[in-house]
Length: 318
Image 1 (spheres, rainbow, N blue to C red):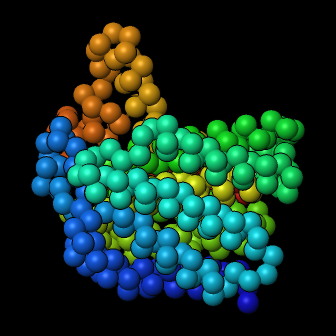
Image 2 (cartoon, one colour):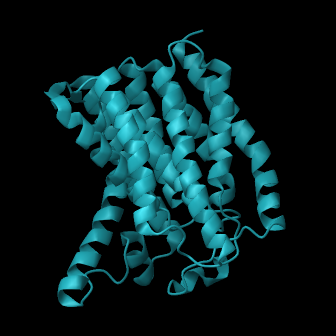
């Protein structure tokens, strides 16, 4: 079975499984009142309070089910990426559960989240050092970090996971941007010879596509931290296991902007008691300016598509 056929199979299977289980997940969440408590200072979101959350379960399960069909041989790193996605998903699930149980928008304390993320990240960082290697590829340029790959990998995990989490603030935003990123990154993995990593990437794409059928405006379910942390962990693994982590800030430019806008806002406010943005992360600033969330999501997806397509072009021809 050639790679193209396998990609088609995992993508279609994940999409179909996701579409089948999503109504059940939504029904269970509603039955048990597993709804999101929305930030009170985002006025336009007040009507979203009570919308079922933990929807990341949909694409996590769909991805695992799909990959079990074709990922059998020489797939250690692909399955490790999927298991790391599950591990971060469980951390996010705990965070979501606390939010729901106590009817608040803050779950785990920041330091508790950081400890959980760091624990997973450091284990994978040592795996990379001993099993993957210490070199990074950047459009044909090889950069050897030596032992520095360990702190670098930890940084990639923490930065990516939290950046994806910050991007999850509008219906279809984190899911839409992640879908485009993983489609193009999966293509780069495929042409670079990382067949099984590419298959896992396209499987998650199928799961996200199914999830978006219920998450686009107006959302019937949110991915929650269950989904956003899982996606961040998975994206980090693909980048690090393939040695293409330096592609991540380019192709994931909208994740980067979400994180940077939040950091700038916090630092500037602490120093001056003034704000750079009307509200951070960046997508909420645009909302405060009167831009409808559908337009914001569309622009984020377009920008991600253009940057990712440019990276794929450079990978092919340079």
